[in-house]
Image (cartoon, rainbow, N blue to C red; front, side, top):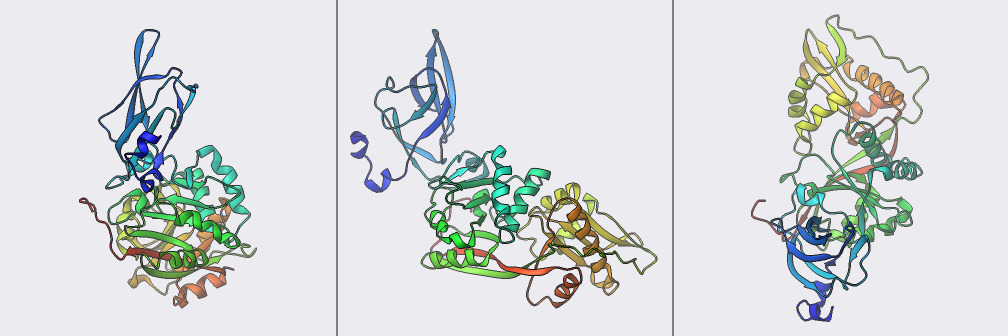
Length: 393
């Protein structure tokens, strides 16, 4: 390691990464770079024949230096390359694409969650309801319906430090990079866990704009306090209303218009719904197509024309309820909300909605269905004072 110290300063040494859990039974004869700067080729001699293994670099990025100090020591079937074998200095890539992100098995403080771990994580999140509701339902929807491809990370000290994040946090961002947005949850009485997030500089590049999607206000306040020295927060606030115990006498009123009928939406309706969705710069049309195909999604059609609609989101919420102006004041909203509340409950979800404080009409509608305010949530754009822009941004 001393030989490498002569090449890298102490700050660089803090960014040394190792590769672990590589199933190779014989030591590598050579270690060389492949064409991809985020992979290594290990060439091993076994039984007189040359075998080549391709290995992902944890964290992704460009391989700047490689120092080999004898591959004959401490070799095991489950190899861990440490200072006694090879030291890699990995610089952050100038841009992190979704492909790069898929190679990130761990960051500085977080590790990628295996899918078979998610049910147990869901159980832990259920202990922190309703504050964990959005993240809890995101995991549940991912397990049940796989509407969108998320990558979940927990603290390396989980569950002692119960903080969890997922990428992306929303399905559309300006550069459509998977690490450009994220969502995070930790118990409100354990906000000190956010220190691990603030120190995370492998999975998250705080020097670039970041998009955060509906995170508990107390968590967001803590992040804003940390981020104030880096840049600015652009926030939109809403309130989480939850229907924990739907009324036993919850009934769907008949549609008053003879030509109106309720039916499951079709994928071809997605374009219109996305066009009129207020936050269509943060959610992709593709996600609307998948929501309609895989989750409860209903529309009221009048004389064959789509008049109003509502769908269940990939994070479990009942959202995107809209009525086109020419069809308003006909009771279509309450009809849709009542129907979807029943269906969401039947599917094992907890019905909830995000309502802006000034939206009196929605507040009145959901109060009739037994929804109650539980906490405030925030959607934010974090903009550094001096953003680092890559050539493809």
